[in-house]
Image (cartoon, rainbow, N blue to C red; front, side, top):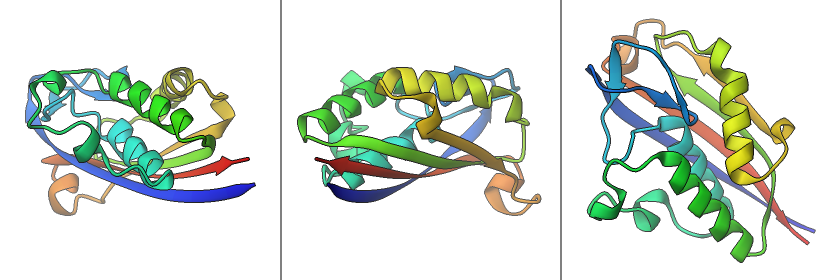
Length: 159
């Protein structure tokens, strides 16, 4: 068996109004993420980690913000396309670990729904997806609630 690891990171501005979707789950909040798609920082970081682990480039190459087909698209669709790329490359997902970096809202109560959504889209077991959240202790753009970010690491294997 051959194992490969990939890392992903994404950050988006927050703005008043709009919708906040993280991990494919709508979250009630007074601010939303700004992005060409739905701005789902967690799924974007996971996509980059998976593509990197498989040697298949990055989210900007596969789903460029200059392509109108991806304008406003749900990031779950991008993740589904990524899962197809992974399978076509012959890889399987061993596990995904991630951090969401946000001062607010508190996200712990949404983790199960996020894990379920991600696992369903990737067609893997929920126990292969782990999600954590961290505040920035009111420091920087994330701490002042100007932005939200996510990090992800993915381990894949090929038989």
